[in-house]
Length: 327
Image (cartoon, rainbow, N blue to C red; front, side):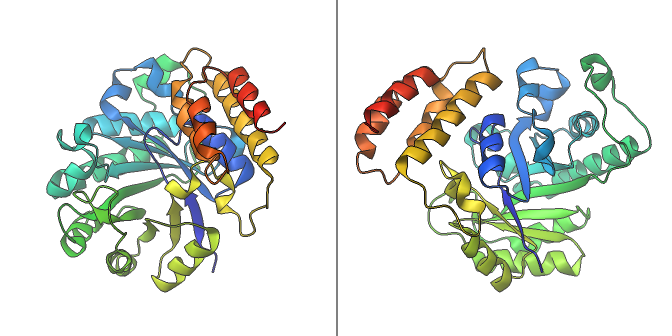
């Protein structure tokens, strides 16, 4: 049975250029956008809609959203369905204090009733969209409509608990709303990204999901295609999401990643930088710098390379730095 291997949604990382490069060189089975606030979407903040750009070849692609107001999840979902997304993913696992302290992200683990209401709002919005409803947001933004008949999933990305393993109670509460899929990261909120992912807790969640005929994806510390396949088989998962192992390494999704020279890796890095400028001509180059640093992991002069790459302000600057290390 084929195990779905996807790119995990990561705030500040999985933007349009990152996904473009990942799809081209890694070709994951499914990709997720960075999360975007439903409150911002309903206020029609122009910059937020740039986070939902994608290429035709990126399908299936899922839009991830966060917040605490069910009515804003409803309005945002109808809009995102109109934009052609194949699924709507609700973030219930982000450990960022700015999100959690307001009750969103991992904060929803402590408010299962609201979590259930949010899932139901997204499901209702998808159903209404399939029945022909178009939101005022869609009409004001002139976003090209996609096929109403296509299947659109409702999924939840979460963690195994808040302070400790709460899979039994937390996942069962989510399953009451019957989402199409639950993606679970094997750490608690308080762990953030420290320690090791608890895959025994993940398989516990998978068993509960399967009893309810809900798909389950696992996430946490996956380092390769074969690691993903092994984990999926051992822990009875329908899919695996790769996160940090994809940083500067779009090839991680391949069964047989190419043995690239540093010149070849540098070319992909430069392509990424140029595409970033093409996608965001009005943005500062600063957010691109961290990606540059990730690409040079393992290089014999990685420290010196990073120091210089972190000072770049354009793809032209990047090209000049790389030229010095390839001559």
